[in-house]
Length: 148
Image (tube, one colour):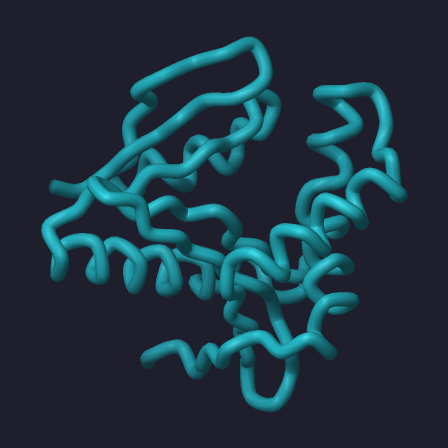
């Protein structure tokens, strides 16, 4: 049975939802990496990225389930965000969304790259299952790539 979800372009009214999803998905990893979640800095950074790069809202039925943000560089696609609310995780939605991004990359002959926090080993395993390999490491983050 296919997963029933859609995406739509985010609108300015989605900024708070997108921030809440980001916090739910990333707060514990940010705290593990940098010792604290600086809400004011996080909100400012989030609002700037929300305005700069188009986001998509993931919908399961009528419910907003998460956000997706992919930017295109000259030689690759950058998966910036693939965040789902906890109640929509571990149900296949993330894998289906990731596969859509990988198909988009294949269609334009570009690999897909992403950054993941070093402490987020579950995300690293998730991406590795989908063909991503670590191509660069810093103390805080890994860069992973998959595709052409």
